[in-house]
Length: 197
Image (cartoon, rainbow, N blue to C red; front, side, top):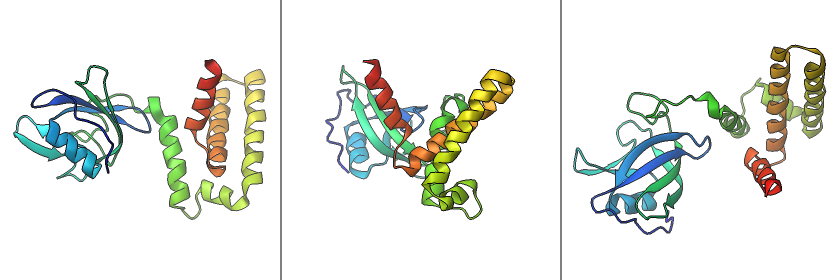
């Protein structure tokens, strides 16, 4: 796997920020020298240069919690790397998702998209998504309409908690419908961004 990037300058190592490719959560900071950078590109798993051990180490080599590279970005000064990765398990040695212990729920919509994708790739007998998929596209689209109406009613005549609940149902079913049509939240974000310009 070659990402076609030239190692940045920085002698024994440059800082590398690892970001969850899906949720955009910052997971950790490490360092790479040219050899670690080249190995990361070649294998598609993040490999650092350990300053304390004075050797290369692939994140997850002992725990199995690898960071699979999705993209590599080098900053404008050519001295820092941003890697967007797909983490397998917790990233931090403490067992936390992130070494920075950031709130997870701030990105839960992206994680929900991952959950929906997983239900498609690994159907669970009896799960709500599996039952709805068996009913077909029309039923999924109809459910979005129903939840939209319930959201409007809650906004006009019910409590704030009711509105949050109905809006949550609407968003979930909309994401479900997008998946059924082969689309994602990223497609919607790109469209909204293009309208903003």
